[in-house]
Length: 122
Image 1 (cartoon, rainbow, N blue to C red):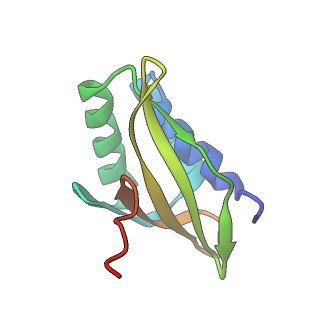
Image 2 (image 1 turned 120 degrees about the vertical axis):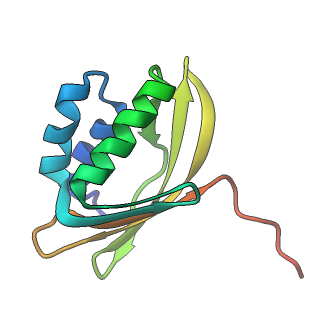
């Protein structure tokens, strides 16, 4: 298991932040100016678009909390980990992120995947 980069805690805090005026502060501590966020439902570029996505998600599901539920595995400034979104203490969604860090130790990209891996075809 790889040591969790410091930026990950602030990034996850942005998603769980209940006060919309504080989301950007978490992002300023964790993401690069050109951060790319891609998951099956969204694509954003830069902290402004990412902040807008997070704020919109907070409006849709205001009680959601976001948690890393595995250790962090990584090499060459690329990391993977499992996460889940909880609503009222129950898992509402889970998945995996593959994240890259830049030279400044800030997140440059997040590629998110929802749910479990599909079954093998063989």
